[in-house]
Image (cartoon, rainbow, N blue to C red; front, top):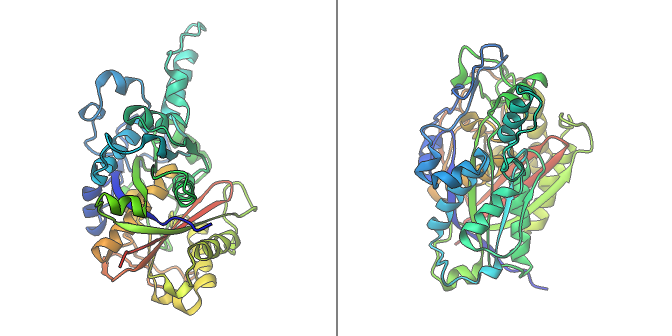
Length: 416
């Protein structure tokens, strides 16, 4: 069976450094940090009092007030980003066969704030179970794609992938395969997360996963720097319209990139820590290259998982050297998490968008906040430190990994 070609025809982004795809891109190339003191709740007694929140976002600017009240923030974010991507694709929703349009979405946690608030309200009450009738529908992780399909009438495959921080990259790969196999013409894919909450911050602090650089939040996310001390929690959403190539060509769609392949693997090592030798990461990049029919020397750019954790950054770069050999030093490597923080289940989607826009614009966004060389990192690797670099990118790779050892890798190609 000959596989269908799959392309990206629409993008939407809602991030801590920009509330549209173009604002997001401008924030990336200008090295903008999204980290700042938390405004959502009192953090006086928390180890970390900053995060990468959205800025100037009001849900009712985009959504009907009554509908917005029925949605957790992670679903609100999904609706806004997917609306932008659908509009960007110029899909004619009156003409498209909606039975062949699906929504495959990623969320690592889902409606955490809704769950937190409902439980707190009960705990602080008199013991009478007065729960909101929308508690469960707001909380469940699959409700975001459900709402996207309900709004637009899309009747194809509809579900959420949950693989921690790899969730939306997982969703993208699933979407790729549905179209490749001829089951769908178009899929709205991506991911959203809204974990900047009392429970989210408290939980990640308890794991010692977050940076505690409270005196300088804007410089706290510092992938590959010797003084990195943990990731910075972010929130938002990224959406991509994946479309069968001939379907896109027939309607004269703008094509951002071709999705060449995806890889998945597991570390099978530890609940939260990566394998120190990057064995699972080596496997996922090799899987992805094989799936795409590419050789290591074909890759020009890698947007790494690069969370700014002491163990993770080193393990990923070791794996890149193992897979790409001498060619590794010719690749522009970066971590856009240095600017956005870590969007958990939405990370794969917004970083895929960053990779695609880097190809489109011929610019690799910087890894900001680097001041101190880590002796455990090969100095010959080009980590695109502090300043964007011009580069003609023909093939870009995006890596995303999650707690539980989940690894996902996606390859994009600029169309000739």
